[in-house]
Length: 440
Image 1 (cartoon, one colour):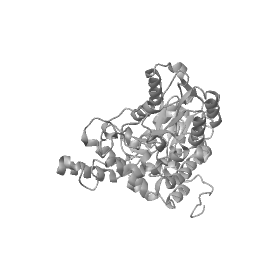
Image 2 (image 1 turned 90 degrees about the horizontal axis):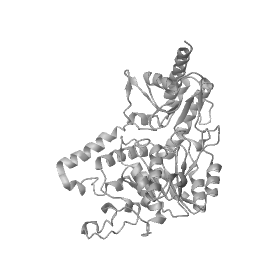
Image 3 (image 1 turned 135 degrees about the horizontal axis):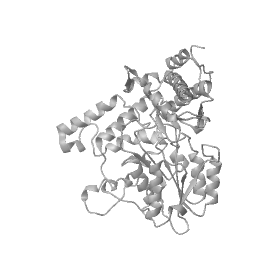
Image 4 (image 1 turned 120 degrees about the vertical axis):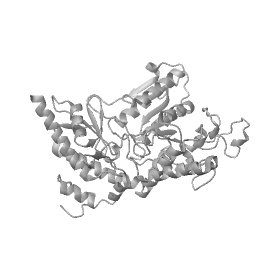
């Protein structure tokens, strides 16, 4: 074992090696910028950033500042202080644009994720008798499935006919890009919209958003992405790829707290098209004339035109704290480089210790995964949920998805290589315990 392992160094299955990786990790100090949950007086192994990220220590400072402004200034806080509330969402623009690869006018913080998906479909799902199908994945996150199904019904079509599902091949777990594109081409004359995830929530697969967007536009339809599991996890170039719209939440890899305000992207080519239908509100009106109150809607020539109301400032303050924390780490590219190595080490340990007991559903190619690994317990006779319960009792927080998948996500902002090593030891013990129990 060398003192300073290079990014291409061979991994070793030992606690000493994991600690050496942590010692020479340039982002190791970022962990100290987060509150780590405790288990029996020690730091928990928190592998659930794919569901809810941990709280940055600066979050309380940012929120307390806004509470103080409200306390001292009342309504004048809209226009006073270092971060006045009237333009507060603009303080998040730079951070959002860097995370998703957008120009500043294309990103905004507003609403919640599924609400934003609905608002985007109001504008970009315009079905007719010929083109009325929406392409989604067969195992879509339920909220996305419900949103698409309800939009189809709203327009008077039958989801059984107008919802087009793409699924993995028999015996496989993840989607093949060539199959997605083949489906698009086969239904080119019928497709009105493609709505797929950037990262598939169940398997952790990163989809080829550039290729899907190109294929969708060639077929003559609009293309949008749900980036709930992608934003803050993997680098993206939405503007360059020509994506029509995208939406994301901010409480997973963006660590801004449960139920926090979501983000939205609309490509700049749509900003000046006033023929695009939208559900309008006064926060989307031209800022220069918003307070004339003449009831003549004049949309802002940016994604801000899709805003409805002024957003909750305390939630935006938490997002700003998270974006500043990410910036202090060097941004998404620096985080992704560590993520590939961190998750790569976890995969190595799992394959070395538990290859016969656990199937890793998440693709191995660097461009096809982010932080998350989805683990299926495949040992005959074992109850995967019981295994999950055992690792929780031992101080691991991950999450469980039916029928038999444990999702774990070592997040580069606050997780360590040591976490990966200790997790695999706990999982191994839990599998052995469950195996012993099943034999009795």
